[in-house]
Image 1 (tube, protein in one colour):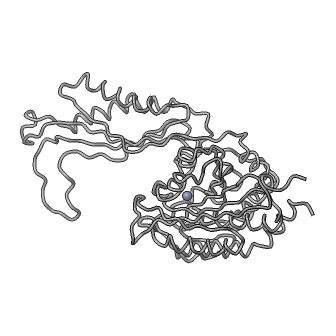
Image 2 (tube, helix red, strand yellow):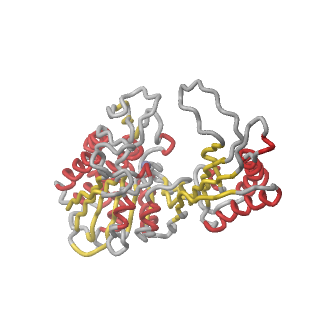
Image 3 (cartoon, helix red, strand yellow):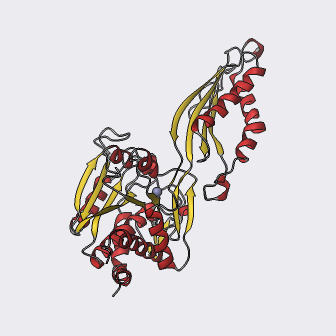
Length: 428
Ligand SMILES: [Zn+2]
């Protein structure tokens, strides 16, 4: 029997196991924040992979944001050497899930099955993907026990809060160094027929305008920081938003609205602190001497971060030129460079061929509007041969009644096993 056929039958034989594995993972409520049950889920996967001949390490991200005795940031890395020298294929999944939120009609940690769906928080983002990757590796090992190189599987912390206690920590230790790992697949829910090549860039900043406090009955004795900020917002509406909308990218970002540069104003605050919830006290009459906004600018691979920042400085300077007494500060909060793996990178080509073999249609190439752990693999790990590929619908992520399709998991497990075959099977 051909290897591809053996893989298909090994996957089929593991269907119940795949479902049970996804259910077990969903039933461990790895909520982030605060970072619950990380050790438990790492132990669970470690135990399973040890029995499959993997060497397993549990790594705590000491001193990462949020790491503490109550909520230690645990990660699991498993590696299984093949029968001879070759390359290493690494599957990386984050094991944390976001809060449950309102609106559920199912038990968020019950992993109930109805028809082809398993319901639960994290079902699609991304415990279904982790289960599919584990089954893919196990099926491939059974079908091709004399494979070359190595297979790695990691389950990592805190992707939902930036990945600093997870992939960033491991990457800083050299675990995604191109000499150790050559191919990375992150089974995030981008759907079984799509290959996600990367993501747009991010710049968060706080902009503050200054004023002078005075009695609210005599505002002419002060200087309103809120009115200054109003001028900034008007300038954004008139010139910045149209400019951003006119910038288009060659990146195949989904949804299509995100193929331009975008800016969100996350928050605005000026004047006195907000009263506490339930307070019935009246505010005091003051001219606001501070006003702050937080901006979230998403930028394209065609843009330089320096130019992105200058756009804002130039805007502030235009406002300053026409408003006496106008002064401001800009504080950087966070930035991530855009990244996009080349379409002819080996992991992309292998995955595209596997999708076509399993689903009978061409793979679609997409780029994520927001970032995920690929940023750390690219920037800290210096590994470019990385994609996100996995089962599930991104639109269900972080929603009530999140679910994963059982057939989608099985199909994408077969795709991932075929990728292993393409990259690691001995050439005959
Ligand atoms: Zn995710």
